[in-house]
Length: 265
Image (cartoon, rainbow, N blue to C red; front, side, top):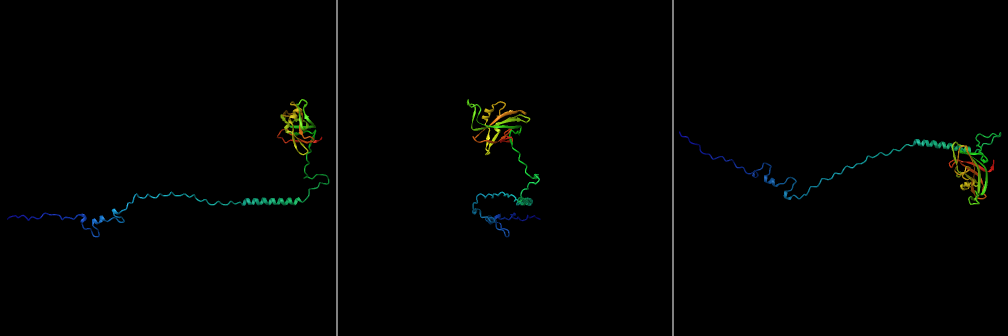
């Protein structure tokens, strides 16, 4: 028995697949070549796209604006307390005016028949000091002993004295320090008045001619407690005018005291 080999079969050749781009698309799908040619949705073909340049910058965001909180309108102050007080004050003033008007028509109280002064009578004015009466102002006690007149002061024969522009009114005074400390007598703090009320200063140069610069000087003379100085005060007044009163001071800042020069006590 003989063995026969099987007949030779052609070698197996796998079927050739067409390229991918030539393959048939699936159902509802376009071929690959057509897919490459079509642009994306909303995009123009590459060759037809215009030059866009650099992209626009992002818009600058404005910072938030700050608005201050609104203040509530100020409340009106209530002035009712002040108005009440003003009303009461006005009422009191009105009562006072009515009272004064009602009492203004009546005349003053007549003097009592028995000679007794009424209780509301004005006090009598103090009697003015006269020549020869001691008066006090501060630490000094003044006494005007006499008043004289002269056209010149000092020894004018040798040209050393002073001549008055008008006429000198000379007060002869005695000054005593009644305080506990020394006090300076200054003639520039002493004055006289005429009948018209005009005020006259002392003449220092005439005072020096009359008194010198010794213990009787009335120009810046320091007087110790208990001591007394006698001197003369000269006032240059127009001729024919006389002094009716003197105003004496222990210093430039004192109240002063008035002495009448018309009569002698």
